[in-house]
Image (cartoon, rainbow, N blue to C red; front, top):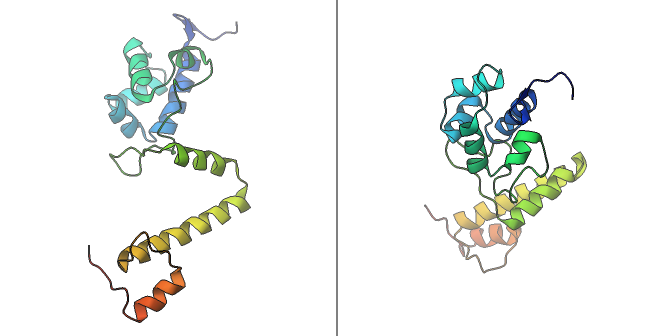
Length: 168
């Protein structure tokens, strides 16, 4: 064992590093992470600086709320999660309050995307942008979802009056 101080059955410095890792993945700010755990941003900062020790309450909060394995948090033993997490996006929040929920297909797509090189990601981004624009056009033109049309057909039919703009 090196010079790291051992507290209970875990090394304090290591558990702090894992705490910071979780905060960056699920936070990403100290305030958002603290809110998710029900503690203040000051408490999060004090833990990260080593001024407040991580206690059993913190461990139970992290494990219960984030579904992190206690052995990973205490000792670094893989895997990190009890089960495959449903929240994977960096920060886990698109706005200040709504967690991003992902189904199995979205998780698979996200995992593949993470492995792609820059050129592959660019192609996926372009395709996603095109599909999003098409969906927005379909919704604006009130095109039935079960009707197969291309963006060009939609524009042409819209010009002929077959589709009309709907206001939501």
